[in-house]
Image (cartoon, rainbow, N blue to C red; front, side, top):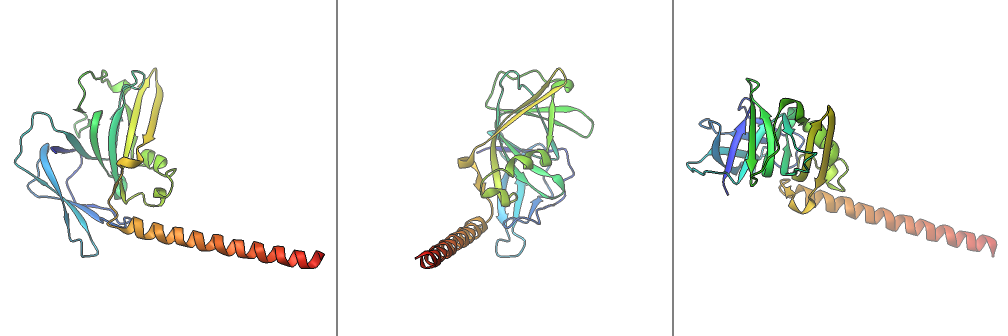
Length: 225
């Protein structure tokens, strides 16, 4: 699968301190954007498991995916019912690693030039500065907080979404649909272990509550008999 990497940020290592799994993202020193990349795991046996992104010598006319390191991403085409399939990995200091699987999004580089990225689409909405709806990590995290069980593991999934967004007549329009089955667990097993612990505790608390209710019922029966 061809992944093309791009960023409008400085390529310093990115931390993910609140993650149970990968604690940081590192970039190869010879990575120059845009370029095709591979993503590897490093230091899994340490207390700093790392995702390592490095360039590969692979040329493709159209990448199958774009991965963008950014703090803000733009969407257009809401009124045209234009949707985008993305996945988002949240990092510290409001950084995001966003992967575009299908659709389009917009990035603004350090010189305020708009860059448009597309995957798997031909007819795309017109892109103008006044019809772009910009979204940052806090905006997208607000949707994650409503996801059952995974809401407590914001930094342990590459969350999959179907997104529509844009501006029309100065009105913001945005919709997000979470695609649970396409989420990628990057907790390195922590989600399963911790979730099972929570479920077990919930079962134990429920069983204890049932015992208390049964004992209360027996006490009432004796009292009124």
